[in-house]
Image 1: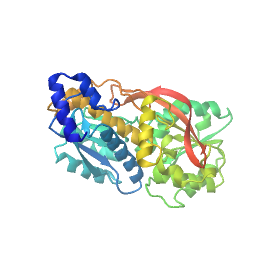
Image 2: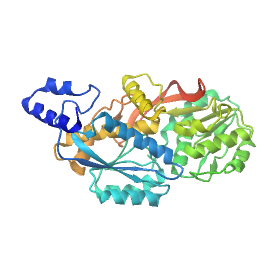
Image 3: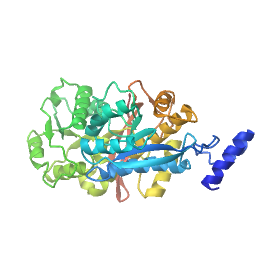
Image 4: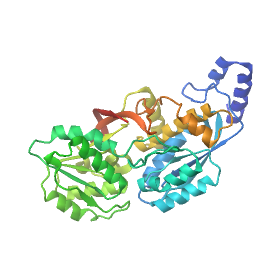
Length: 399
């Protein structure tokens, strides 16, 4: 059935009260099945990097959101969707320009945003515009007291908080953990969460953190001097925070420097296209904490991961899942907001959506507008000839 004929059929059947027939018209997995379809489209603005070092992450965010739309016949809450995508770029200024462009388009909601600097840079503009932003990645811990900003990812210090106790249980009492991260809000949060949950006064993490220059496009020797300083301390394990191209270069340069002991990190270190760029000997055994693993065994993930692999020829990532869930959040919110949703009505509705049946497992928003959810421990290992993040066990429930 075509999209147009489906809409007409749904309207007609809804008017006749033919609930069973309406349900029969759609797939049971279609969130739009059984609800009346409006002729009034809604505009959604998606901010994601389409250039620069974070482009692969941006593409995952776009992929996740678009997959939900495709599974829902391009409907959210019964409304056809006009999705407007703008390039976040690499800086707070480019992210702000993307936001300003979308606000001129009278969008009912915004989503996306990868860089923590961008999220902090657009906070006041979003709040003043009174347009809800369902962020699907960046979530700095300093982003507080917001009314119109929601996040389907996690607070940036939570990966470290989830991983800290596990690492503390694995490092000998007389051992030492070296810590290294880029000097920007995301790196600071990752280190702070880890130190607090490991035990901030624990002598095993007493050495000062090595802060690297923040870069989304590092060279082959960008981290060499910092890694030398780190290895001079002879750590028994390393905790680090890098993502995308930075993660690839850091891991390669750490291996080239001769380090062969355990690496722990938030899951972005080995997420997405990163493992495609590494040799098995460089990445095998890395342990990470994240809210998602592509091999999670639940009904929602089986449907999602299968559809994602079929469409993109690759396993989905946490970035795609968070964006997929952002679309789910908007679907529920727009439906609750009624036949004529406005940004303000939608924002009120977001507080009423309840539990999300996510590929990562069920979750719901807490009071600070971030998910209460499970965190998982993953290990990089070979799956045939391919490197994969394999689920080991649960670490914690945070949020």
